[in-house]
Image (cartoon, rainbow, N blue to C red; front, side):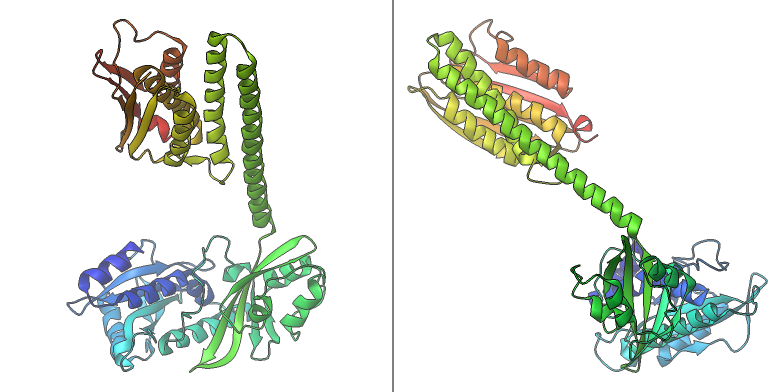
Length: 494
């Protein structure tokens, strides 16, 4: 629908309210096409007085007239007078005789699109025109279902023309899984009594345990009998099954879930009944439940891994306190810090349903942990983080967090050993690269020390092996150290 928004705003003829109204109507274009068994086109007037198609829906159960999408095309001469007449008169204009389109006889109906929230008189509230193009070449004796569908379409066209459709009270919920006319249609009168139920609609209710005919029955009473008393139901269910509000809800019985959408029908503002679209969404809800279960399982796994890692860190801490060897105590303390860093990542993953991590949050906690553990009694280290890492896949969050833990730890323990100083971590992210620069104001790099030690080997393995990045140490003795890490984002965003 970008054409609709772009054209409307470019011409400056419609308000944002009008554009929203057209979006809602175009969203129900498929419903109108299926009910009318015809192509549905939405036209918008341009600043030169012509009309341009901004939306097009083809019928699911009938042959389309337009094999190519006509969105963006100007109105054809044979429809221009009819479309202009509906726009100017604010009344529905039907073709007086069959219109021939590419050797196919058609019938065209032009309906003014009235926005009741626009304000002004009736003429000024017309914001566009919707046309119905019916293929007469395949005309045959209509079934009762086709007649009912056609009546429902005509009711909605009248509501479009008097500004009561689309209903502003209808929620703009995602249309994935929403019932369509072909899935099942029930028509009820103003008292909620079923006057028509399509075979698919009846089958959906049969699967929930209703083994009678729906016609002549109160739909509210039928659903009350179907839903077990012990089951908690959506508060909107009574309003939907009586057709009093344009909402959606689900009914669940005998392991079957049926989605319902109500479309209240009005005649000049007076409610005359409703259409209810229904669809068996049992499989869809089952898949959604499986995804929720899997997400919960993944979160629980991360939570348990985090707890186990913290237990390991605690054991290392206890062992470090009891050892009498300074070298062993240092090794155990470093191992404890590395385990804690990994636990921070898993703790973050356990809090959400996504497998992507806001690494700025992770690194804030890691940095605080490193500063507290790494500083010796005679070392006063301050840390500062600038820039943003952004969101990273979880499989890259752990090696990056561990690598940065080692780099910052080295800066505090070795660069600032026995003195006061600052460690700055700057993250710069572009579309192609993530660069992390760690600087300290310490004593700098002694000759021949780069690339030695277990910590440096861990850093190289993580950055170069796990993240396919590069790392470079810069600086000289007495002038501090700068470590630059470059990671290609194509690896992070796979």
